[in-house]
View 1 (cartoon, one colour):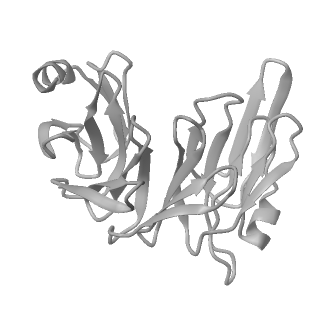
View 2: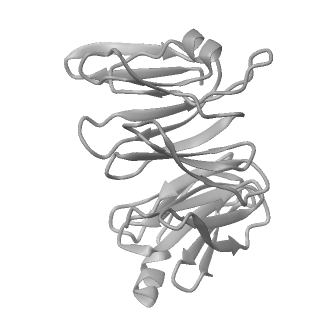
Length: 251
């Protein structure tokens, strides 16, 4: 997909053309509910870029390409508000923290960066992954970042100490998605190209449940109740009810 369409009840849809495939979109959970669009490419000798736009605001892809910047648009005026230029290679998986103050993004170089949205400063650079990082999520308590990589690992990073907390190993192929369970933030579910969803207990760093999707997994989503997981891959879409018993056992 090389286009992002934004619309609301009062305006016609706005198409934002991208010069490369849009790999990830993440919504800010707080008003004015901005969303981050990750769209990366190499053009000539230039590095790649991570594009952020706000609700109802178009992105000028040619400007992103030539300046190698992150463009942040004002949600009320649709004018350019902020520019971030901090990526040396392809950016992946940009995600907001739930208070809207920070954004974390991975890259094909394996580096995870945490940005202050207002100041545009890089607050942390986490190095440890040995392959591209497609998955970035902030933990529920705000002060940790969970990442998943093509090096087949999930890693937990602590923002205040700038340290790696733990490494979760068990997948046999790329890790491309993951989320904490809403009903129990101590449980994190990851999806991989090895066809499996794995549920991890972050207190013991152990895998407590493995579910077979039957095909490489590209995306997953836990339902609000915490006892149902949906996964999407290259063949079909499945929902799993096994999570309910595990949540009760691990709580």
